[in-house]
Length: 437
Image (cartoon, rainbow, N blue to C red; front, side, top):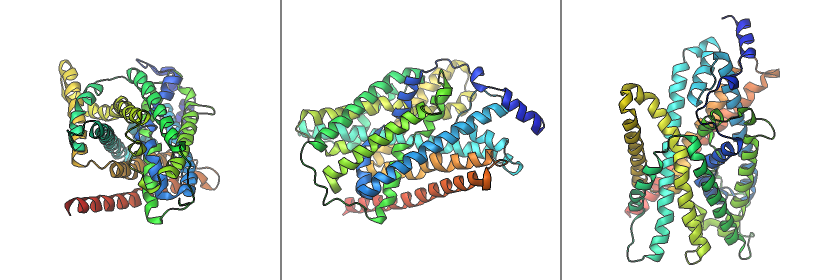
């Protein structure tokens, strides 16, 4: 097919008209899933991010990062749709979009198409395994606080609670369709918003002192701020499954749209909780602000319980990405009559694997930072910038502004990756030293 024919073909083919989704989601359900992908444990870690950056830098940084993350999601979804038109496919996943962009891009990139797909799938897999590990530790720490306070005769380490919660997580992990996950996402969002309001109640309960709070934090802690906010904001691995299963995917982009509403809501919630959470608790903040709440008031007790239930209900949404990748490679190796058993066994095995990592490294703040710095920088910043550049290589705009803009995105992602990982690894080494002393 010559270039002229391909251009005509791209114009004629509408992927939305050819989508045959088994269980499509409405705009509201899609918004609920998209919000839940970004409004998990990350929002509760935002006050700690502000403590690392200072409240002035925190506000400005949160707005800028929200814009960058939203822009990266936008350009990746647009790229995916253009790839669908080019190859006449109704929908493409995250890794498939990367592969197709390289296949139809400049000639030197075409031989890298398979490598691009493998790299994207590797990044997705390990990102969401990391997220599942974070969820396991957060649930365990929240419940441990309550049990330690009200059942002082039985003091278990957090690792034991990680093991106990493998049972309900294994059950939730058996949910296979996003449509079935939407009600759980909605309930989880309600519980999370309720927890958010309870946190605000304790934040504003007494007078707030800001004179002793830093406007600009210590420079060496700024990478930890970036890692936490990127982790909290990014939900790009869930974006393509959400967009691909929408009843009206045209409503995902634009203004107003599902993406714009979601990112605006997320930015406002993060800014408010981060700013005032830091004002209230200062440098005593923990990996989740709920861990700073008192243990003798029923609203605080409810908040700790709500966040645990919310994360349990959120778990299968992120778990969906992991299983989707694994099944792509495993199902062809197993006879059709055994594939249901394969699904059950693999889902249980992955939950147990994530629980095992949580047991081995039960450091909530550090796991959040390492996943944000290493994997979400790759998924949410570096890959979208590269894919958009490759796809638009023949038309990069006046003065090649698209190229320069995407170079800045990729460089920013690399800086976040290297600096965030370095600071987090040093933090883990310091914690391990203190434990052995």
